[in-house]
Image (cartoon, rainbow, N blue to C red; front, top):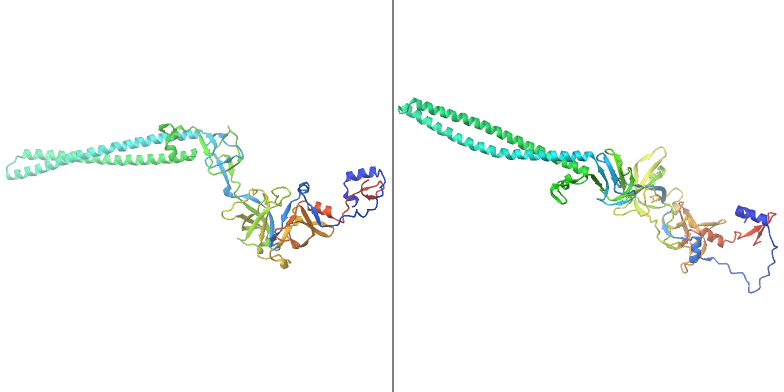
Length: 488
């Protein structure tokens, strides 16, 4: 151990103080005081594991040579974000707070708007126009029917006078009728025909008027329907709900009792951004707030274009946390909160020519959901088992036993790992690791372990120092700069 390994403050104190007493000679150990036998096992009791923060990782079968690892982050799907904008200008009153969890139909805010008052007036005018048009249609029907009856009576009179004229003309030809009788009958026939013509003309006018009334009723009804749909869009309810009787007022439609527009959530989510405060006056189309569905995420990584020959759409991929999964309890093996997310690889349709990269996108599989820790903006690692190994790694092709690279400590030139004793979980076995290739996070271990063995992850360096025979355990410096082992 040299001076560079001693903290500066401790080194200064040792140099100033020096040795207060000479080292006392130690008696040679007797026969019963033999040094303990060297062993490759170290105790890792629960107290030791807690004090050193020891955690474990399991030995896994992994295809390290063909595994391409790319950093990236989660992002929201376009469908996860929903904006709520003001359909009308007015004074807004918020009913939810930021980050509140809302369900479909939850009231979000109210707007007191003069535009809604105008809409209510338009609805009232439209309903009145429909009522007037319907009254006109209802009134023209009996009138047309009465004129038809009147026309039938006049037609009957015309027929009667026509027959009377024909009879008198025959009698006159036979010398049995006077000329003035024939002339009077012909005058009566002409008068009846004139009255019939006027009746037919009036009846035609009534039919045209009835058609106009029907058209006006249809137009008024259509305008009312459109106004109901427009009002329903503003109010955030259906047109049928607006027409329904108001609560406690069977004779009054609901739209007459609505004083302000209440906007409700169209889908479940979390209130993400609130753009206004209660009491603010906003313009039409101004954004009031937005909600997100945080579970609707996908993973996006940036890969190199040189890796494109090894990648293809549809390849199985896994997204893992950028940091190792913490155990369920400190010092104990557990699944942890950072579970991996399996999915399918999708290459972006375009690449970046300037940076020579291409986006790699992974979404959860059908029916699957991302892990709880996956949130937009969270960094993670994309792992893809490619169709071919990189150049120079063909000999290590295939699935092999592997451990996290952080499990390996170096004692001089030796790579050291600590395997938890399967027979005694409170002991760890120091081993020289027979390592193979690595991908920056996982390393192949060729011998000494089996699949499922637990290897010390956090705390491996402390165990290595405690069991090393080449690292000086302690000592002190004299004022002259010389180093002595043992206490002062």
